[in-house]
Length: 164
Image 1 (cartoon, rainbow, N blue to C red):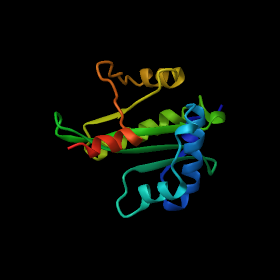
Image 2: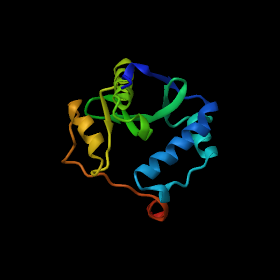
Image 3: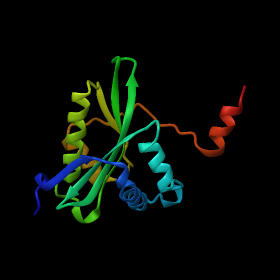
Image 4: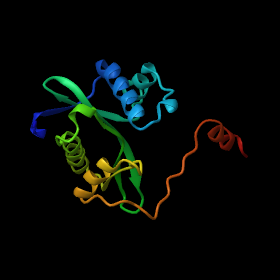
């Protein structure tokens, strides 16, 4: 069995857009959400490496091959008075799961959060993703059961924005 120390984690560069997009599509397939992927490689390039980057990406490589990615961005806690890191996506290719690579990506982001003086590190998980939930429980991460995630997209977002 390969140990997590065989994972190299690096910040993504613009040359990685095709790899990032490929991993995003794999993640969508795993989460049974391929119908929601409307982004293009150009969208990813503009949003991550354009004039105003909205998120950061880490690439996990095993023996020089990209096998995972983590996309995160900053939020802000008014109660703590500090920024936080929100992990939007973490994905490890199926053949590399169970080796500690996902956990190593989380450790890397936790260290970044502390280095950047963040007050918290948050993410969401699909309720059926028991392997991920078990990992998060082992890390002493706490589910926020009192909070319900709401989302506006598409026509509903446009409709709200038009209201006076």
